[in-house]
Length: 332
Image (cartoon, rainbow, N blue to C red; front, side):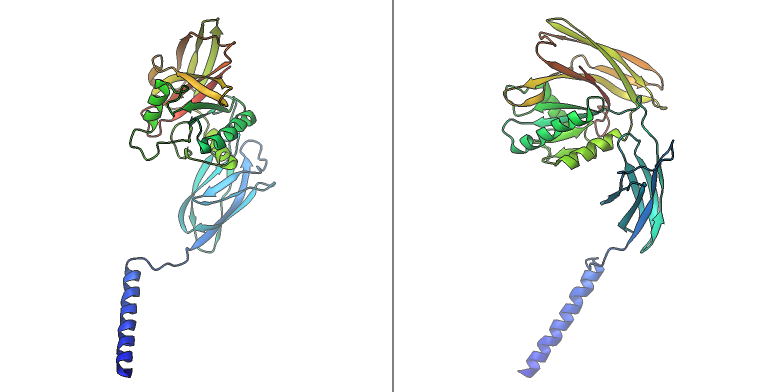
């Protein structure tokens, strides 16, 4: 009996050794992540003043600068990392740095203020359904943020996609364009910030998460300037204006488009889209720096003033991977 016990013990030890050897070879032995840190100061590029409340992030690690513009970012995995800083009213900035184990590396930033001309307006598209619980949670958050930012920084459009009386064929077609049938991300709510990019949200998100997405888009600045004017009577409205390339590079394959929306008192859809200018959209094959393109949209069968109508003109790159909206302008 004792011999059998010794035999079984030896076999067990051998098998255990083989098990751990295989785990080691397959990379399944878990070891603590080696980390280092980053510290520095964030200042205004023009005045040299320190900037407080700047979001500094490296991967999943983030912090904010203090009143003196100082920050420290701990537990950043070693290796070459990209560090991004974001502050409303300034261009975002990204730098690469080598993180060394157990060392704090200095990295300073000087942020460039956004001029009024280069202010990016974030067009937020909320795809929503009536009687959708998560939609009812995020909708008031977005509507609150519109009031906080103002239309010169954010425009919200709510597009009903549950094939109710508030859904139109154009809304359904635009939804399918973003999320083709069979896509894992169909469903509501879907919140898009200037198209489908890294800031897109599928499902519920809280106030701070949504606000951070808007701030990140604003911080990118814009390459396009939009000027609009509106003339209306009791049966038709014309929205006209120009777009200008204010960047230093040629922009290609753009579209000038627009939407109109109004408040639905009975269902609390404050920014409910009822028309998209699909047939009238203006293609822009190429737009060199400083060049200007004119546009004009005529809308029939409603009274802009009496029906409490609002609009948005936007410039989109439909063939880009994220279907990016480069700039938007609210039409009062």
